[in-house]
Image 1 (tube, rainbow, N blue to C red):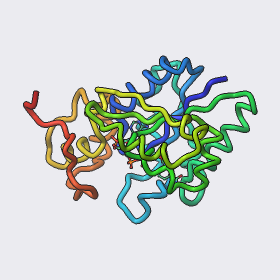
Image 2: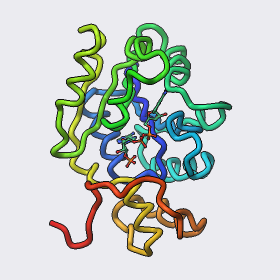
Image 3: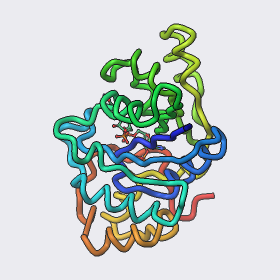
Length: 218
Ligand code: NAP
C-alpha cells in the first residue's frame, strides 16, 4: 500500500490543492490519497481559522467525484493541536510496517519541518512531498535537507505545480472584497462559501502574498 496523506488547513480547498494531490497520485504511483484537514493547525493557534467541521465539509465536496481521493476527520475529531506526528502514527498503524506513506503539503509548510514535533520520527514514518509554485527557489528546501542526516534528507522531495498559483489566502481576500472566485475552486465549494457567508467582510489574518492571482494579469 502506497498511501498519500494530503495535509493542510484547506481554508478553503481550491484547484491548486486538487492538482497537487492528483499529480502526486500519478508521480508516486499511490494507491489513494487521503485529505486530512487540520483540526487546530499548531502554528495557527490564536489566529482566525474557519471551524474545522466546515473546512472538512468543503474538502469532502471537492473530492467526492474522484475515486482515488478520500477525506479523513482524524484531525478534526482529535482534541488539541493537530500534530502531524500523531496523524502519521495513526496511518502507519493502518498501512502496517510494509506500507509506504507520503505526506503531501506546501513547500512553505515543509520548510518548517525541523520545528515540528518529533521531526526525525516524522521523516522515518513518511516521505514528505513539498509542493512548490513555479519559480519557487529550491535553495530553501536544500538548506533544510543540509541540516538532516542523508537518509532523512532524501525523504524530502519536491514537486512543482503551476496550478498552485491559486492560494487560499487570495480566495479569502477576493471573497472579502466581493471579487469572483469562480474557476479557482470546485463549484460546490464556491456555493458552500457563499451560502454560509464564509470570509465575507473578514479582515485578512495574513499579509497579502506576492503570488496572488491578479485580475487581468498575464
Ligand atoms: P500553511 O502555513 O497555511 O501553508 C503554507 C503554504 O503551503 C501555503 O502556501 C499553502 O497554500 C500551502 N499548502 C498548504 N497545504 C497544502 C497542500 N496540501 N498542498 C499544496 N499546498 C499546500 O500550512 P497549513 O495548511 O496550515 O499546514 C500544512 C500541513 O502541515 C498541515 O497538515 C499541518 O497540520 C501541518 N503542520 C504540522 C505542524 C506540526 O505537526 N507541528 C506544524 C505546522 C504545520 P494555501 O494557503 O493555498 O493552502
